[in-house]
Each structure stands twice: as structure tokens, then as C-alpha cells.
Length: 223
Image 1 (tube, rainbow, N blue to C red):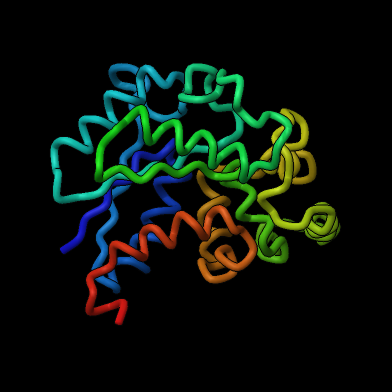
Image 2 (image 1 turned 135 degrees about the vertical axis):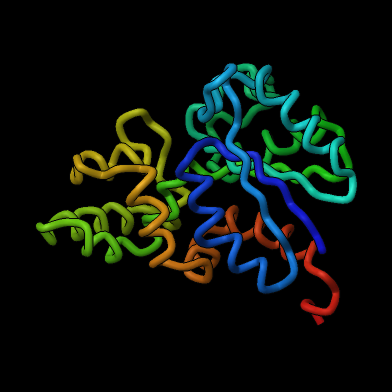
């Protein structure tokens, strides 16, 4: 049995893992366990400080050397103390993929554990929902909302290219046309309706992460 612990940003990501990733990989012999980051005693959720995240990652990596540890954090609004964020070499004018790859490499160096697999979502979880905006139709009364989201998705080569401005990040775009959008409720449900195959096909950085998980599958399932 191959185990992977995922330190996730919040309840939305936890539900996404449990409802979509966990069943998919369990069938293949890879067992995922999502764990929401702790921000302070009694409180969970949100990557507000890397200083609080690092001990949790190290503890997970060291407590079960036979398992692997990965992350499910948004690139959007990462704290300034995140490894590489304040580095002069950080590609601030680059693509989301470039930024995420740079920060993931810096995170790998800082954690320095052989069983660690870094992952940042470009630019945030809601980008995955722009893969197929038609799936919002079940949750809205006005189909113009679906059309609006679809039109916005068409403006970008991939959903991962939707930018990270506080006003135009994927979640902000959804909330602008669907004020009743509830991240922890609608997000995982819509993601499940879209499905992993569609997400992998449309989101290259997300697909790269899943390829790393695929590489952990027992040999009998990858033959």
C-alpha cells in the first residue's frame, strides 16, 4: 500500500481530495489522506505564514518515511515569507506556471526531504472550475451567468492563465457573477462534475502534479 499525505489549504481542498482524487487513486492502489493546515491552536485553514506551515510539512515527512507528502496550496496570495517569494530571481512578470515552478523548487530545497512533492495550484483552486463552466448551470437560475463565465474562460489559453489580481482571480470572477457561490460547497461538487480527465487536459501544471502522483502507483497498475 502506497500512502500520500496532502497538506491542504482549507476545507474546499480537503473535500476536493476526498470526493475526487481519493476515490480515483484508491482504485489504483494509492491512498491519499488530506490534512488541513493548522494556523493556530484550535484553528485550521489558510496559508497565512510559511513559518507555521514548514513544521507541519517536516513532521509529516518524518513521521512516516515510507509515505509521500505533497501540498495543495493556491499560488494566489501566498505569504511573503514563502520560500522564493521575496527572491530577486522570482519571475514576478512571468506566467503562473513559471511562478509556481520556481516557488515549488524553492520549497523543495527548504523542506529537503526525499519523500516530499511540492505542489501549488495556478493560480487558485477555482481555476479548475473554468475548465468547463457549463457545470455551473445546475447551481444558477440565470444561464447568462454560465455564459459570462464561459466567455471569460475563452479569453485565456488555459484556465491556469487566469490572473491573480485581487479583483480578477478565478474565485473573484465567480463571485462577481454568482454572489451566492460557496467555495466549500459548490467548488468540490462542480469539480467532481467536470472530472479529472478534463482538468488534466486543460491545466498543464495541475497535470504535472498528478503525473508525479501517478509515478507512485504500484507497478502492477502502471503496466
